[in-house]
Amino acid sequence: MISLIGSSTIILPLPSAAFVFAAGAILNPFFVGLLAGIGATIGEFTGYFLGLGGRKIIKDKWKKMVNKTEKLFQKYGGFLVILIFAATPLPDDITGIVGGILKYPIKKFFIAVLIGKIILHLIIAYAGLYSMKWVLDVLGFGS
Image 1 (cartoon, rainbow, N blue to C red):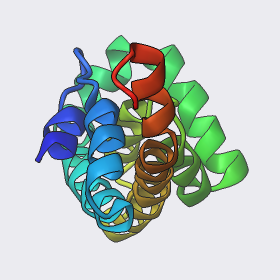
Image 2: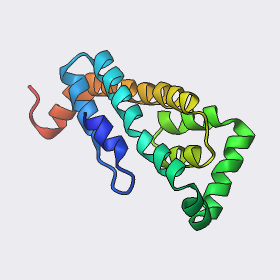
Image 3: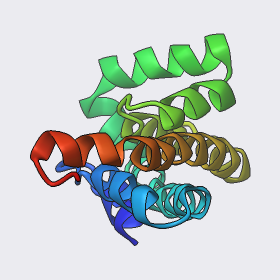
């Protein structure tokens, strides 16, 4: 739920990665990463539907940014661009908005974001598992 809410916000991002990091240290990091990735994927549809519904207004207002992202989609393929932005801390809301503006196929968008978000959240959850002892030691709570 935290990843879904965190990915749904466009203007004010929530630090859902911190929760995934901590949960990965306490719970099974594979399932934490998998569920967080699914939640984040669902949350990314906010940007997609914003772009789809406000295509004309957004395209006119943010013409330069939309054109740059559209060129990335054309040069590297939308699927790859969406996947890379979803799997990294890059601002992937813009790929969702542009995907909606360009009417990028929703199934391809979903699959690209899902793969990327699961990869990202698995890395964060396993980082939590393998580094929480160190974090607790640094904070003075370790044994």
